[in-house]
Length: 187
Image 1 (cartoon, rainbow, N blue to C red):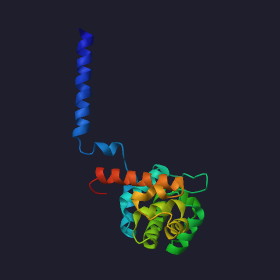
Image 2: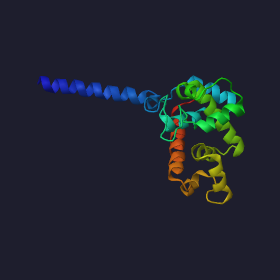
Image 3: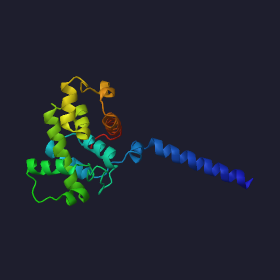
Image 4: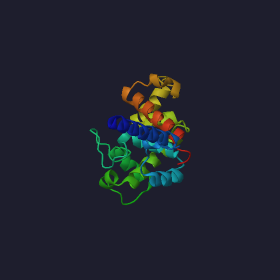
């Protein structure tokens, strides 16, 4: 008898927990959290880049873990290649920033990564799908794909991207972008 009563109590508690979870309007945010919101928001406003796009790229690149370094040498939250980071520092005229700082300092890494996204947006006339591909493969490769008719720059034809890594990267970033936009009313 006591065992049945315990099972009922546990069942009621479980059902109550599930109801509270699903009635809470932001329950999906538990599964898709966004870290460094203030830093992303500030850089998003500064460079006029969609904050959900920045968050999606960070999610795919490092899952919001700082101090990451890829096998190819990309550093920090937004996985900037050292040559690209040095070029951004020079172009954006951002003083007194070392690659070591970029690797460990989320705010500075987000600043450079967002500046670079703004630059890619300007290069590719605001086409976010092409921007995402260029962020991964480089603007030169993506420009040649577009110029040679290999890919037309549309989401519907992402399957035509010749690099599997870039094709998969674009799909993942768009997936997280769509999740974030659905879950969060505002950034």
